Image (cartoon, rainbow, N blue to C red; front, side, top):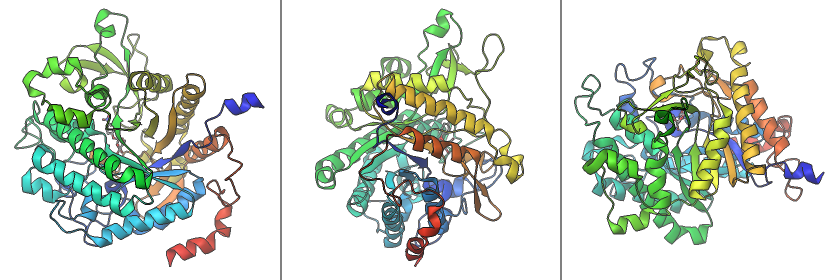
Length: 501
Ligand code: PNW
């Protein structure tokens, strides 16, 4: 028996699913919301694969109670979602008016999650900058303005929600914000040196400047939280970084000497260790902005945990000129022609679970911070072309989660990595940025004609797995508690009705 218990995740381990405001909410023009940079960008010809935008998405601004019922039916302990800055401050700036209707929406959502024993895990910025700030002063390119405006926005969220939200993420994936938004120009605001994509932008400088400013905005918001709110509210604050594991392509010195953690280290090293990585300084020279001594003091140690979004592993070989990958080439094809794992719908993702375990170990050794896996998931190839019934048997996604959950457990119980939570991406299919709606990452199928939600096999697998692999908490577990089964829903109907009223 003792053996059995120690082979599980600790009882307070948080698990659930993640989403982001612009990918699910829709209702872009109601209740005083201001535009975000994704509103118009997604409407420009050629910016999304299917030409579709975020005006409706999964309609979750209106259907949030249905989403809540779904979370309850899945028995999750926690839900990671993001707040749309332009619902809280429609024009975005520190002297612009606050929108009470926007506050009310998230406040209700938080109250109703808590009423069901679901812990909110809240991202303040998941890529939807208020368009007002882009127009006014160039958004993330303008350090003096954006840092102050972001900190003001964060402060309002701490003031209005912090009595109930105890887990804050300042940013989702600064690397994607910088590199996709200002380097490749495939994400809003879409700036790039590639003139077929954008009439302005400079791929060689802007991504590094934007990344630098995002780090500062994160650090000053985190400082504010820790100095003025943490003690009274008792929460924690950190950042979520994306990073994939890297394996040498072969045993040549060019492969072995890879600097392939480029995407990982650019942001993690300054935040956790207090300096940009050496290879980055060498590669960029004067193009890499520098922190003043005072700024560095605020940046170093500004994240209380490591928020990790990870999806895949790359085979790496030194060479090429992609600075965003540290001048390393990526492939999934081994020297003998075989594939690393099963190919997903998007080119950048294959299923390789051992890399997940190695990455967790690497990050814990390097930064010594508790880890929350804030995103991890898979998009089944051609799922969008299948009839619903067929799409629900999402074997490749089930296989992916079988691998990563088993790696997660090994990392915790065998390797001793301090992992506190895991969020699968995503609760449901949604607006997959430049891919539009053709790439589906959900454990729940969304029929965009009817907005009906259908659990896929992977939802069943993930929920069952966490129920079986977390130590039971005898003290707080009641029949109507956090892991109330689907069948409990009927009994809880009165509660749901009360919420609807
Ligand atoms: C993450 N890549 O983005 C985001 O946080 C989510 O909003 C998104 O839906 C999810 O992963 C799936 O894509 C990424 O090109 C976007 O390697 C692109 C990459 C990785 C993550």
